[in-house]
Image (cartoon, rainbow, N blue to C red; front, side):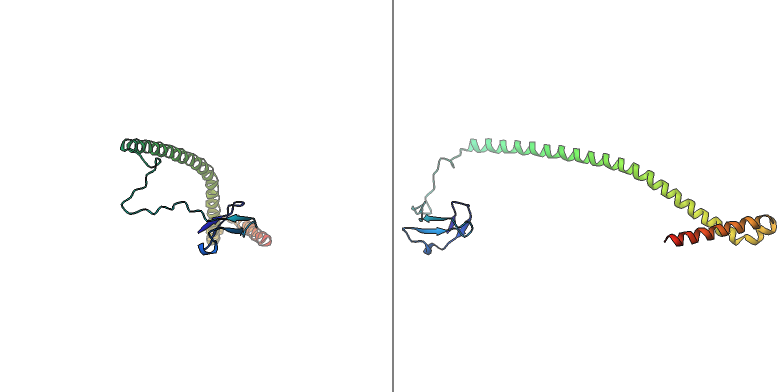
Length: 165
């Protein structure tokens, strides 16, 4: 049987043979409260299979059942519609947040995309100039000093970046 402590409402499972018919003192293992407990038999009557339990609370006419079912269905429909409305509102808020975050993310990502394209293009130009250095100097003799200064500047930038790391 299950016994509940009257002080802290903790429930304990106790063997029926441990409590005599006249009752006994029990102590709660959780709060150490001591009380006198007697076995109370609520249903002394043994029902046969063909007997029915009759209570006023249980009796419901078919009309009342139909009314209760209709009321329950109406309540369910109201709850469903409220849930759908809340979901729609949340979806709209998420879409608004996504569009604003996409706009700010696009601006930042566009800048970095342009920066990367510029750096790659600049490196490709330097490689092209280095490859065609001799023919360009033959055509434009003054270009030799400019290219030499450019390569020296790039070498200095490279050393500066290595020092930073």
